[in-house]
Amino acid sequence: MVQVKSSVFIKSATRPSNYPPADLPEIAFAGRSNVGKSSLINVLVNRKALVRTSSTPGRTQLLNFFTINDAFTLVDLPGYGFAKVPPAVKAQWGPMVRTYLEERKSLRAVVVLFDIRRVPREEDLQLLDWLEEFEIPTIPVITKADKIGRGQRERQIKPILEATGLPRDAFTLFSAVSRDGTEEIWERLETTLRPEAPDDSRAEAPDIR
Image 1 (cartoon, one colour):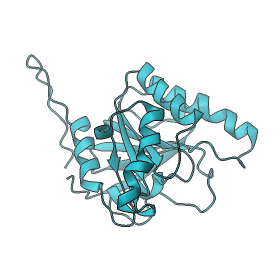
Image 2 (cartoon, rainbow, N blue to C red):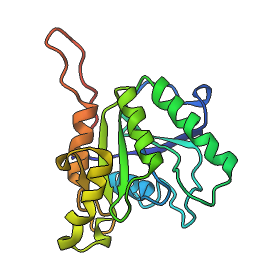
Image 3 (tube, one colour):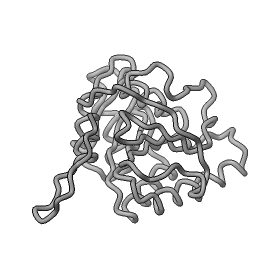
Image 4 (spheres, rainbow, N blue to C red):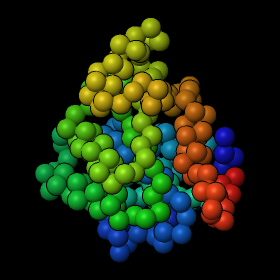
């Protein structure tokens, strides 16, 4: 697992002209409002409040960039699907996120979060369609595992598998309370951040540690 020595907020942005330079490999995090994106990122980097959490879903409406170990970038994408967000704000989400996915050349993968208590809806499936369209690797995570008893988890997971069409072993179960799943998620992130170079390539993988 990556030893996080430094984690720094870079900037917020809404469009490519505002993005920070694409000098480092990048992993983005996406999901519905209140799915636990901020909590997951904070656990991964072992910080209590690198990413601000809010009791009001839908508050994060910007792309927030963070650099880790001066070696790679994590991006907290705006949440979606919260009913009380004004229609004009809802309308901004699609173009903002789609543009980022399509144009960000340093993007290596997107961690897509699903609440274990919720069946995926239209926005979730649209996001998965975009990732497939742009051939962006997807790391699916099921959050809030602690909210469901261990004996009931697989029953709760089944509708998520059916809706997304993804296999069970593609998902990692995660709890911000117990931190279960943290090491597995880091293993998947490391695989994405440090791909094996082709035999005829002299490119070296970045030192993410």
